[in-house]
Length: 163
Image (cartoon, rainbow, N blue to C red; front, side, top):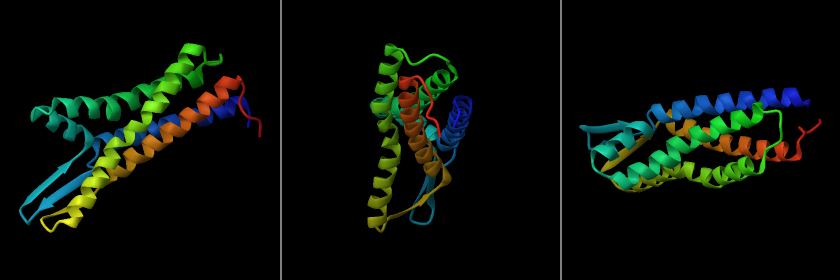
């Protein structure tokens, strides 16, 4: 694959990750149904907003930082690095590696929701329905990790792989 076509592929993957992330943040991720009458549906954004309204500042900050701000910042940095014609400098590489390491925490929401689903399914009080936002967010987080890996490896060697 040529260098310019490799850049285009990476930029398309970044665009796809951005779309998936947006859907994952705004679309409903789960619906809790308690008994017959009580139903709560929320997205990551509405869930974090509810945490803030309820005074759960620590959880609000952690989830907002790792699940909203970090992935958006990481996508912007990845796009900048892909468009750049120069290899990654030492400071950018350190930032990218740090983001890659902490980017795994972006999956925190997905794991918390998965645990909630299992716990609620074990009880007879409530039912949980998963929605597209959960899958879109998980796909975006995984795709961002893969793109980061490709960008770090390709830009570090100063050339795109030839295929």
